[in-house]
Amino acid sequence: MPQTYTPIASTTVGTATNSVTFSSIPSTYTDLILVVNGVLTGSGGGRFRVNGDTGTNYSYTRVYGNGSAAASDRNSNQDFAYGSNLTTVVSNGIYHFMNYSNTTTNKTIISRNSASDAMVNAVANLWRSTAAINSITFDTGGYNMTTGFALALYGIKAA
Amino acid sequence: MAFTYSPIASVTVGSGGASSITFNDIPQNYTDLVVKVSARSSVNDTAFTVQFNGSTTAYYTRNLLTYVAAPTAGTAASSTQSNTASASLEALEPSTYTANTFNSSEIYIPNYAGSTNKSFSADTVTENNGTQSMLVMVAGLLSNTTAITSIKLSPATSGNFVQYSTAYLYGIRATEY
Image (cartoon, rainbow over all chains, first blue to last red; front, side):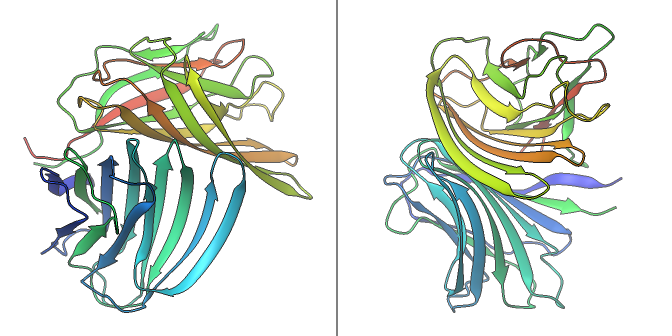
């Protein structure tokens, strides 16, 4: 039976922090889904790295609406993958890591962010590495995830 | 134990249509909720709304990104809406669009049973063959800390959801039983 959204790990922030890492991710699934939901101490945070890679090996193309205009942009050679535009109002991000455990291809991550007071966007990320993803670090930069901020990692296994 | 989108409830609109689709008594033992919708209006109405817990108090805020694709040109736009009695998700397949065609929508509500305000996402598409299609992404906020126990979907202005419109409610659990 195909399994979808099998919980791998989850955490709820107790003490405010700007970084949460999911490590030792099993390689037995086909895709990963990371869901984040909560409030930051400031507006504009939400990005991630995989396998602790701090090199400029990420790029993204984004389409977004900020309540007054729709736009699209692209950035290459970034040292983070673009995640979300989380704010001081409860908002959420959902990230799909496609075929994360293969060791043949670079990795594609689709992000979907909803911040009702700031931005709604969809992002296609690329991590230029053929390594299997075994850790994900979600980072909110200069702002903290406040107490109660929830992060949940799920695995999806193909039939 | 295998985990899936756990089905909670489903609605298929019968003959005569339905003025709304409501899921009541939503169990509180999941982490997130997902609603999958396939709907069409009985009139020329291109929007539908979502309302939680039957509340019509002005709690809703949303940020919307719309892309309308036409045969020769497409347009993108963004808008906001605040303090409304329900959140409009747009993109309902109206009666004037290609026959037997329904929209496709997903509403994702993380941490629906928590004691904070509720953020939700909605992605919807419509299609009118050879004329235009629409993609709408919504960032929504319910400014109410009460856990969500019911969800109501309605055409935004008038008419009904037609026969064969469907809505499926699923639960996702972040921790094992």
